[in-house]
Amino acid sequence: GNNVISPDGERELFNVADFYYVDDAYFSILGIPVVEGTPFSEEHSIADDILISRKFADMLVLNNGWDDGIPGHSVQITEHHNKGQSSRISGIFPDLIIGTISNSDIRPSVFFYLPREAFVRSLEENPGYPFLVLIKTVPGSHENITLKMTDIFNSAMLRGEARVESLALVQSNAYHPVEAFRNSIYAGVIIVLIITLMGLLGYLNEEIIRQRKSLAIRKINGATTFGIVKIFVFGLAGLAIPFIIAGLAGAWFLATKWMEGFLVQISLKWWIFALTGAAILVMTGMAALINSIRAVNANPVDALHYE
Image (cartoon, rainbow, N blue to C red; front, side):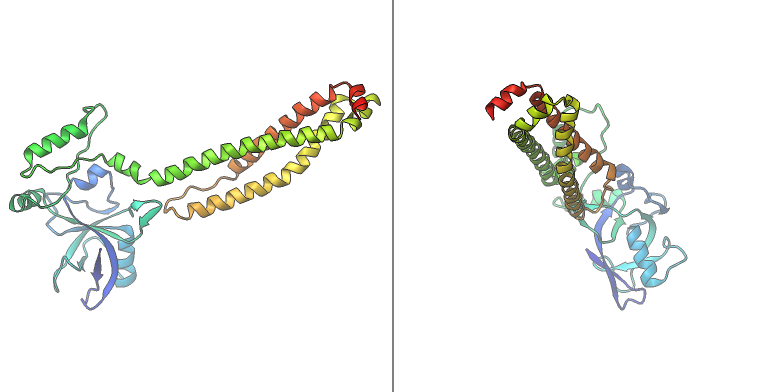
């Protein structure tokens, strides 16, 4: 990055993420809008004109007091300008996510304009000059488009060392660690649910064995199946609900902490946690219902004889 110099040339105001030089097609190919001022164009832009991010513009207003609009003003940036030199601000684009949303550079950003002919001239004068060429493909393109583009570029380049990459694939690969963590969470949740269900079934079985004499006496005394089942289901619900609430609170806390590491965040909807808790409660109730009905339908004489 480089630093923005104050209008009097005496101070360095703030540091920026410098993307250096692009031509007039860069922003349109990537779909980056210019929300204030004008984008780069061959007709109206000159070399070293700049496009700046919204945060860059806000910092200029804060430091220089430019309340009359930022486009049209000129700024001096280290590495690009000597004392007395500056670049005209052509326009402003929305703040970009530089890097990934989990590891983002939050500095203001700037792009400098350079005509396409100047890039070609630099390559002719210095074959080792590194630069990027953006190519926008459409659905239905050649199925081996990356390999085909590599062959075309290497046949045209003086040194034949072009490397063609898919931007979508590069972006996807950047999020592999986050995706792996998400998948491990999914796997962990499934395993925990299976273990929980096994523990629940074991608890119900032990509880039914412990209370089978009581169940038999209730049934002999005329208690209905519904009444006996209700005792089990409601008793288990009273035990499960506090733990479900505590688990959901812990899940909300951990999810909030995890999302603090991302620049762009979704809002955690309360109904997602409510539905999750309801699903767990229904699963618990169904397990209790099935096991208690099976216990109630058993012969009470056998239960008393066992006791």
